[in-house]
Image (tube, rainbow, N blue to C red; front, side):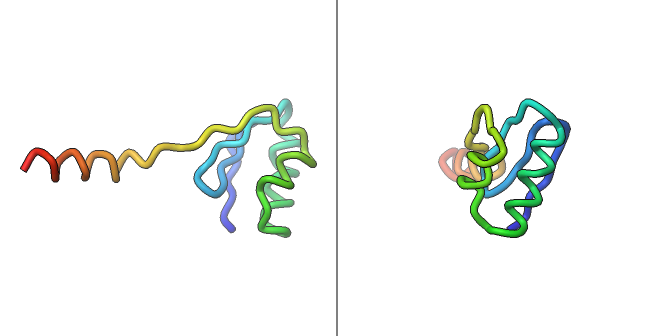
Length: 68
């Protein structure tokens, strides 16, 4: 499973996972890569919040299809 980190925020599985420190975000990313279980890794590494990411491209495509 892919996981990327930007500062204190990690991105995996269509969600952003927010952490108190960069080290916690990096530990989360390593855990996700190893275990493929973002929910468990978030708990283990002290995730402070989780946000579902929007698929902006899919929304724009759907709006264009409705306009036709």
